[in-house]
Length: 127
Ligand SMILES: [Zn+2]
Image 1 (cartoon, helix red, strand yellow):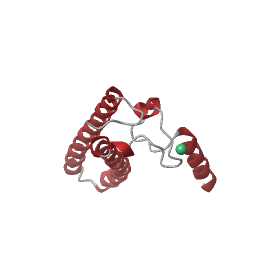
Image 2 (cartoon, rainbow, N blue to C red):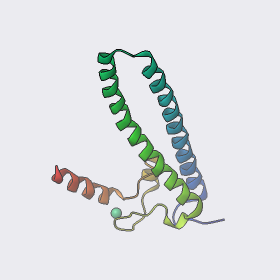
Image 3 (tube, rainbow, N blue to C red):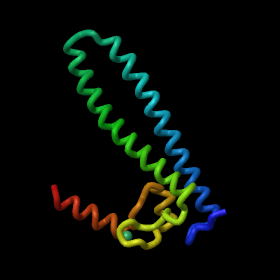
Image 4 (cartoon, rainbow, N blue to C red):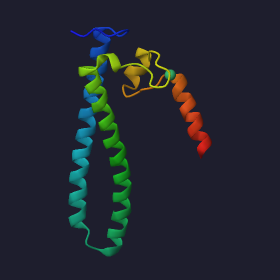
């Protein structure tokens, strides 16, 4: 069994569970969304309604994109948790250990709070 540098087996299992749950949630949302889209498409032949529908669909697409991105991130995290444990839990910015509290709250976090703050600050300046 792989042993993590600073997280206990129990903590790792909690994070794994949280990530798996997140993946299941998104997959469920994505599949139910798809069904709604299809049924809406058939029941609205009117051009005006279709225009509205297009707008709604593009909104839905943006949301879907975000969800799919999140899903990808979660899968990546789960892959790390399973196969590359030594790469999990360290900040990509400065390499320090990310707190368990932060990881369980945001399992996809790849940066420590400090680096995250700096990144957000930089992003804020670009706008
Ligand atoms: Zn950092």
